[in-house]
Length: 404
Image (cartoon, rainbow, N blue to C red; front, side, top):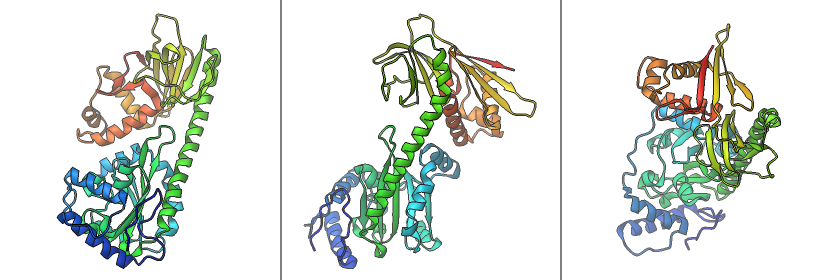
């Protein structure tokens, strides 16, 4: 049997191939490669490239990586920050047919190869447990060797890895098929969707199913992005109408939701903006940048005065809170969750800032819930833009805080 060179969507095994015979050839190739002997056949390019990377990383083919799985708090934080949770139902629905028979599991991993979610029959999940293929585990190439998750991330392409194409020997009884999922806003890889199971269950069409589901997930992310721009546009419209000069409303990645007296453009190249203030923006010149819910207001200015932002926090009779933000050209209101209201109140009382451990003590009575705190701060900063900065967590220097 001649070993195949991979194309973009070439499966490890073609229709008509005998998987058992192919696995024997792969085992002979693998043993020769590991011992430095003459290869009886050439591995696929995507596999040989991966083996070279993995060997360079020092992965032990008999043991694999030793990085422990994430604890529960860290796993939850990874899920929340991955950008993948919103499309998880689409991935599950799209691949239900592949895992319905009970022979395969569906896995979603983040951009670093950490397994975030698994779905499948208890029988196959228990077999995966014995491989360390569990939620929170690190399946990047430099830890777990050649596998569909890590190799899809490293190569940036969909890949199917069968039997002894895996670098770590204990994985030879499995096959896995993975495809990267990219953020349509930035082009960056968010993670990988993977279908894995015992090697005997391999099917050439699995790759042809997994990759389109990944593309469908990307289209859903694109639609979500369009909806977020619509929301930002609605918030910004009255502010832009009152703006005394050229201005734009953009999301955190610079995608333009609305503009006034500025030449049309789809995206603005923003400087590194962490807090409201005055920045030099390419093609626009000096601009005042103010926080909006879900983005930034960019005002082209000739004034020498840096615009300050006022944040007024109001406690309501029913125990809820509101945050009113006045950036000079307009006002908007956000209603924080009770937990976020606690955080904002603490930061208002401590203008010097607070560490994650200090906030953990304030919120939970112990200093070691820092992973949860960072996840909460990430969500809060998405709502309030650059009004809150990190290192330590605090209101930005250009923000005046008032409590009512």
